[in-house]
Image (tube, rainbow, N blue to C red):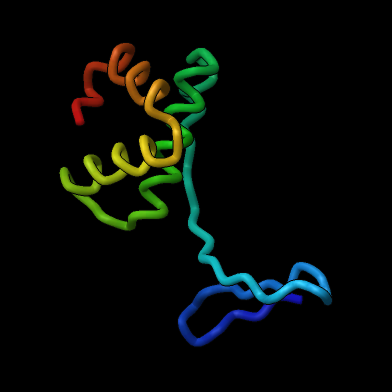
Length: 91
């Protein structure tokens, strides 16, 4: 059962014995250009973009916050790799 509350969050009951979980859905677009990258870069970009969806902060501060969130989630090595292969990723 899925219910959308007034706060626009989806509440899902996963089974009769479990309590409700509340979370928000976001849309993350991953460019077809990623097909040209190796697995490490794809994982790093995907984690970075999901972190953007989680933090919902834009601009330079949003980039820094997304990187910090990636590290918190355990994607520090992938972030370092992304910085090494993509000079435009400067945060």
